[in-house]
Length: 113
Image (cartoon, one colour):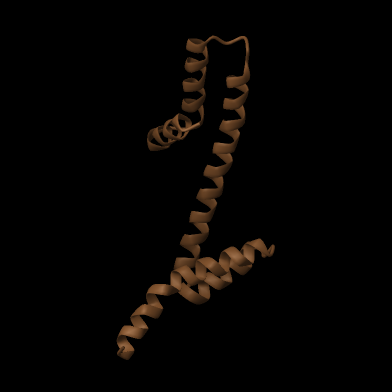
């Protein structure tokens, strides 16, 4: 292969390599400043900042989803609710926690459980 093709392949593989390194660092207990440093070295400050913001958004989503699921499971387990009442309460709970495309996503996730 030509050097330009090899370089193109290296650049294409870099995001996956960095992602694997970040996962490894986190599994080993590294803090977010170390994750930021690795990303900054690989992609630059702006990209590392955007990735940190994406991490924060994903963590917030995961927490909101976990909170919702705990409340949802309690509603599902409530023996005093009839099916129609439970369905209305679950929909109200979804709307309390989510809106727009997130609401549709949660409905789809709930359909699978």
